[in-house]
Length: 62
Image (cartoon, rainbow, N blue to C red):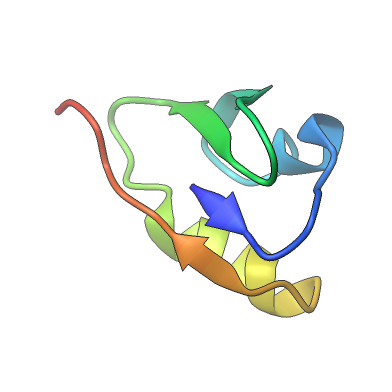
């Protein structure tokens, strides 16, 4: 995923269902989540609550 600004991985790891957050480059991150849940709605809520703009978000794997 990509936000409009930097976010700490520690903060991202507090999102429900997220087990690990990895900073890739710039404002891009990879989240590892509990595979029984779709974390995208929680990520969107996180962005709204933190006044962030979510530029990209995609699910990889099943």
